Structure formats: structure tokens, C-alpha cells
Image (cartoon, rainbow, N blue to C red; front, side, top):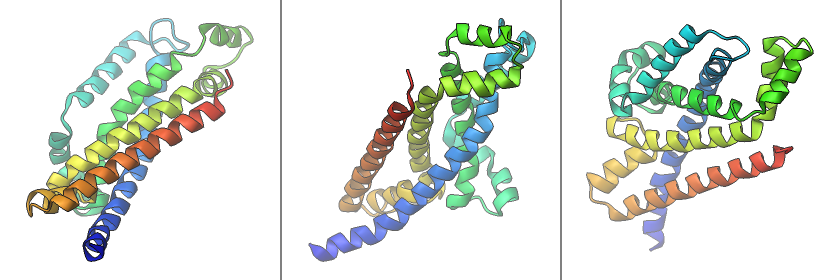
Length: 220
């Protein structure tokens, strides 16, 4: 029993580290890219503080198209980009590229939804006092919607965990790759069950942390 447990742990721990690495870095990149897109969706809509309906429609359409592409197909499509940036198309670092791309439009919509929850009266009051669009974004929209933004980023991380597991089918590394190579191809039920349990624990831990942080910073 001890020998079997050590064998499973020796397989799980490196794969778990790879998954955490992929998820954390991909989340950072997707938030950096998705935040400005989400802000633009809000401020350029009809009645927004920087109203540009035509631009808003084009941007919304592009984001919707990107969200419609299945992850595995997108991963194959961006193989050349992964090879250009990191020099390979397999492994955890290479997988960060498609993970960041697939999560960016999701983040943009999450940011858009969160910013729209801000009381319109607070925005109008800031405008009446002569605040610039940039000041409204940084002093009103983002601070007031921060708890919702944290919840959205938490949901993004959980989605990326799911995508990273799928990436294992194409040599992406992490827990998904472990489940496929051992749990499926080698019929190692113990490793497969352990992988599922670890994924459940990780998702629950991220959700708990996100809820806790959002609650702590909620000033309402």
C-alpha cells in the first residue's frame, strides 16, 4: 500500500506543479489582455462614457467568434504561434499560449458584466464633476466592481483548469496528460482516480479562495 501511494504521489506532484504553473501564468496573461477589452466593451457601447457603437459592435463580434472556437481546435491553430514564441508546440510552456488566447475573450465578457453592475448614478456623478473617462474607469468602475471582478477571475481560473486538462490530449502536460497516459492508455485506475480527486480539490480551493477574497474586499 505504501509503495503504491508513493508511486502515485511521484506521478501526481510533478503533474500538479505543471497544472498550477499553466493556470497561474495563463490567468495573468488572459486578465492583462481581457481587462482592457472588457473595459472597451462597456465604455464604447451606446450611452457609454466613450460612445462608439460601430467599434463596439466590431469588437463584440470578434470576441464572440473567438469564444466560439473549441479549445482543442484553437490549440492546433495556434501551434505556429507557440512554436514561434517558445520554440515548441508541446509541453506546459507552449500550452500557455493557447490557454491565454482561449481565456481572453471569456475574461473580456466577465469584465464587461462586472463593470455593468456599477451604479450608473456613480458614473454620472463623476462626469458632472468633470472626471475624464480614464479617471472614471480607474476610480469608479474598477474599484466599485472589484468583488465581482475577483469572482470572475476565479471562474476564469477554474475554466482554464478544464482547458489545461484537455490540453493533455495534445501533449500539454499537467494532470490531464497524466490521466490520459496512465489512466487511459495504461488502464491505471488508481492514477486516474487520484488525478480526478486532485482536480476536484484544486477547483474547490480556488473557488473558496476567490469567494473569501471577494467577500473581504466588498465594501457594500
